[in-house]
Length: 282
Image (cartoon, rainbow, N blue to C red; front, side):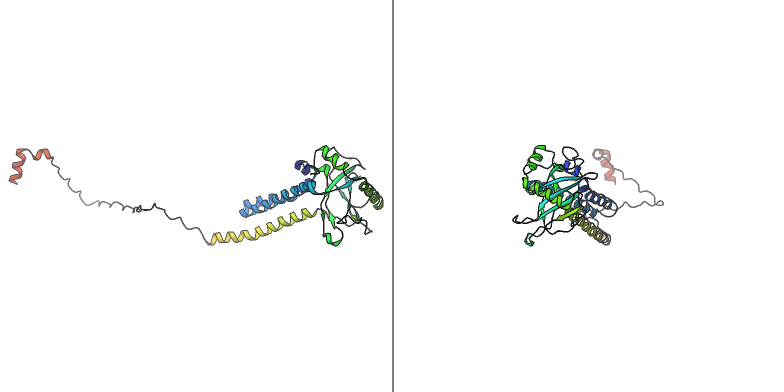
């Protein structure tokens, strides 16, 4: 890998990556408590988009291309990143992306204007068209805290790339407008989107999940109301008869006299001679 990413440092330098996922989590939790438990899906979508973005940044530092970058303005910080938009590298199609960046918390502290930086990026577009359509660079100083990795990546950029960056900046002026300058086409800059394509996909996925959940929640709720759950049947073990409920005792009538108690004669008294005579007379 070109550098080892520090996720906490990356999020601290790019707090905007938390906006969409945090909003999705808040909306999902509120909806799950007030509307329907299916709204937890919105929380899952927000968290999934956030972790997918972090994994993409990690992949950039492992497999992405390295590009020269330079700080061109302060308050707010602006950087210029150079790239060759030729897919096979055989033809020079110079392009410079000028954009604002949060550099106050970068490794080494806030930079100075004119400081050389390194960026890693993936190209986007159709390579069969003859030129890439765009790229999304990440400043290495804002993605890792390892100073040795940063120094190695910056020194690994060829001197010709730094010279092409300087030539491109002299071509577009000392204070170029924000956007993607495709110098081989001439003219003004092609306006870069306010947020990256990854943010757009994340926001779209969360919006679709929210819409589907809002539509599905009333359907599930109406089904639950239409078919109430039946009471559970009593289960008995096999071979065991179900005990019948006992009949309630009959009520005694208030006007009926009580039956006389039967006299019980002990068996020992029956063996006495006097008792035998009484039985014979009877």
